[in-house]
Image: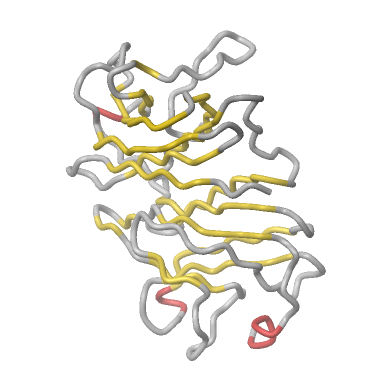
Length: 245
């Protein structure tokens, strides 16, 4: 679709985070805002494993007003053999979305990429805002490798102070970070170190599964805290601030 690259730019703000591994290999990706990239077309982002793109306004595709498609390729000249997956959505002016590109462990041979859009503003179910005088971390664990340590996901804790407990659901259940869960956690304001811990560590005082990250939280802040990694290696933890709308 050569014409897609010259279509109008949408009024939505989008960025991409690359948490993709193929098998046990961390995988860099190229991001194009078109259905199929031309051989000489330049990507809008080149993302090493574990990195986030700049915010961009994607082009509309040929499906209709407001509809955009992002295509994800292995590095190199874009071709069908290098195409890993796509994300298509109808966006409105003012929408703000981060698309997490992650491994599809259920069917990696046929569909290697799983995309999880997190709506920061707009959409039918945007992420919650921080309550007055507080800050939020948004935990999401689709990038976690399957292992005995992460079978039920992970939990986050402030180093030296204990676990960050999510609010229970209507049935009183508490969600760990992993599988399909996107978990919002209120964090103390100021500078602190946050680590990812085993779900069996009820107090988050044992050795963390991933090296802690240092964040500085101000009232009203929101940020992603993403646990991810490749099998057989220590987990990684990335803090990605969410821009204010």
